Image 1 (cartoon, one colour):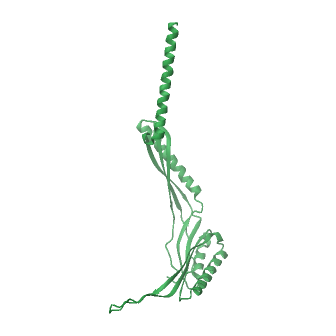
Image 2 (cartoon, helix red, strand yellow):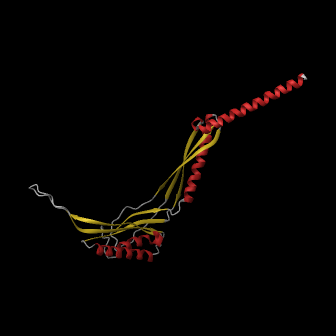
Image 3 (cartoon, one colour):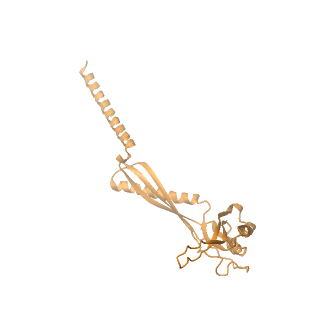
Length: 258
């Protein structure tokens, strides 16, 4: 065989062997990473995005509480009539049926307790002397102009307490997306800055972790049993100011180091 051809074939074989070796090494590296993720050199960055929106829903709860004797049926009837009257009033004020939800209904016994005899005799058992029927309903108000009147009217119609007034966004998806986009952009920029400062290249994105927080504006609890609430007299409407609501999204990105 011609020496030149033999030499050419030799270099060709060596080149093919080198390519095969490099490919095999890359495959081994990829396989190793797939079965042992901890072998991947990586780093993480964290960033926070914020978005501010105006709440579009006011929420509160009201309770109707009846205390009486041993006739549970009478107490339940009275409680139901009062609660239904309030619910009818809310509907007449434009509150939708799906925005009214019963959160709790309970019947609790009330006991009379007796002191034990001083002579060491057996202690007399406690006795049920009556029952307390309580019903708690949560309400969403979408028309803030009527919120103060609705709260005052709820008390006038027989609610024993009205509390936990708070504000929220009915569908926070759009606001969350705005905060998420800001957090992602900040995290990517931070990752690029770290790679540049560290003198290495960013590899593929290995993982994304997200956490979000919703900060709600609120009004302090007020009770129908205090300050004249619960009377039949007309009550001044509360001034309802929802303010603004801030949603934050925290993003953690984990990148491979190349």
